[in-house]
Image (cartoon, rainbow, N blue to C red):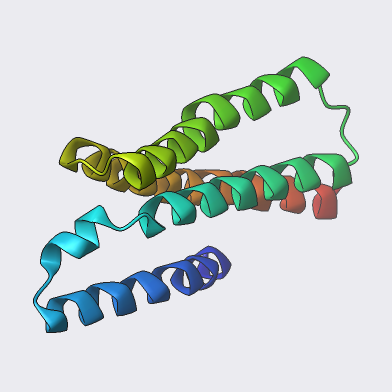
Length: 130
């Protein structure tokens, strides 16, 4: 679990710096309206997708291709695509509902990062036990 926290802290540090700078400049709205939330969500989803897929391929277990395909579709449909939509929306017509949407996607991506990280750890441990 420590490895997950360390990896996540490397994602979180730039956002802490962004918030600190925006608060110091007195522009708190810029924190909410920043498209960095969507970019980070996309990166987190892509990292999780890559880590889980890599762990499944490295494990010596027979993996049901339909289960893996369903997982990939879920990540793309519920994670990557909404993040890209909010990113596009904030660039073309920045509104508060889209800003809050991208923050919600960031929170969801962060949660998925830990859930998927636990899956990767379990798959890695199964391989070492076998």
